[in-house]
Amino acid sequence: MVSIATIGLYIAYALPSFFRVILARKSFVPGPFNLGAFSIMVGWVAVLWVATITILFSLPVQYPVTVESLNYAPVAVGGMAILVFGSWLGSAKFWFKGPSANVESISIARELSSPFL
Image (tube, rainbow, N blue to C red):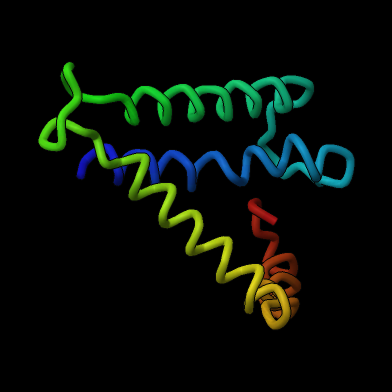
């Protein structure tokens, strides 16, 4: 159970980094704190680390592998991935538009000279 939760947590952490280095390489607007020229390299290191940890946590706990010693983490994570992507392809991609920006709160924060915006 711990490996299932850990794999899920790491995948959730890596997906934004993966999409940042793949899809938003040129269109991404960095915030006030960024790694500059190293951001793409650090993003790839994070993605590769998550891939490595996912493989390591999917390995069997002991050999020989029996029904009792089989690590069911890949089965659970793979099953969940199939359900999530199936739900996206079958339904959500037609109606989900993403989060809506609250422009009023952003403009109010800028007027108050927030150092974070």
